[in-house]
Image (cartoon, rainbow, N blue to C red; front, top):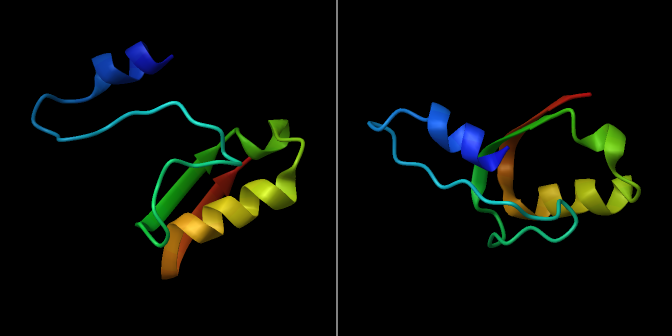
Length: 68
């Protein structure tokens, strides 16, 4: 899946694609202004931990968009 995503990214866009556990994200606190989660949370056993980890990585006032 990661290779498919890499193949679809335009060479004009700087991006970093990573595989990580949603309960242990490899990002610093308050790093993101916008987080998009599609078809992920329905498969998570520790939903409270996942939401907490997303909150930690998001800046205050940022947007979280979830699609189940």
